[in-house]
Image (cartoon, rainbow, N blue to C red):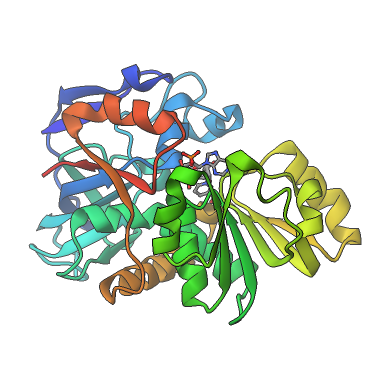
Length: 324
Ligand SMILES: NC(=O)c1ccc[n+]([C@@H]2O[C@H](COP(=O)([O-])OP(=O)(O)OC[C@H]3O[C@@H](n4cnc5c(N)ncnc54)[C@H](OP(=O)(O)O)[C@@H]3O)[C@@H](O)[C@H]2O)c1
């Protein structure tokens, strides 16, 4: 089968397309023919080996796992003798995390890993595209804050993978949403449901006097200190991006302030919670309550090009690799 192989950390050029042996499922595994995968922030970080502390998990000098890729959608092609949750022909989505392996034509996954059924009306591209951003945003909106109807929520980085999902989820929970993005993405975020749009290239947030119950800085570009004036008395500042100042704020400011900062590494939560979120996101997609924003679709052969594009930091929603 064809698979992307990496032997070193680095730029997109480390992603080589090679022919490798097709895997065979063990007794508790399903063999999946991968139809599509997406380029997640985690996959990019694992390719570059940054931040460096991540190498404690992914390999100190070079990647331990040779085939990258963390999210996928596909069809079950074979099952091991003990598999009872999936059958041949089932459509599925899966997240593989540090085990990776999604940038290939086939993968074997234990049936009790993060793998769930995919309804007929959801394409592989839509399913894999929403998984990372959708589940990350949902995790923040369920575990870190309970949004109530009428809450004022600001989403920064509204045109990215987490941002496009966060707008739609916040609207689904009844919030009044202000989206911060550049002017070229204003129409996109409005169509996703944003009630107001602020242009970050024109400093429109900095110049605004609006206050919010929740600020979700999905891209880690805002400063908590500068954002405090935009938080209501018990407002929450959420970020999925861990930096030294985030850590310092949680340790030394949170205990004394009503305006708290919250970070979560959503991928490190319990498997049961993550499967619950995957199912919820897929249900919302199936019932057209949310949709996947797909920017570009590439092939396995174009993996380096796809990563180059994502590295620019300006994708709209999600970048997909169509495989089958
Ligand atoms: N903690 C967790 O569990 C977790 C999980 C997943 C991801 N993450 C992290 O979350 C972050 C976001 O991931 P993502 O996949 O959503 O990112 P992404 O899709 O790559 O974000 C790209 C978007 O960010 C926008 N953007 C760039 N600079 C901006 C700025 N200064 N202000 C506002 N928007 C800006 C771009 O819009 P323009 O083109 O207009 O600039 C673009 O649409 C990453 O750092 C990732 O590592 C954390």
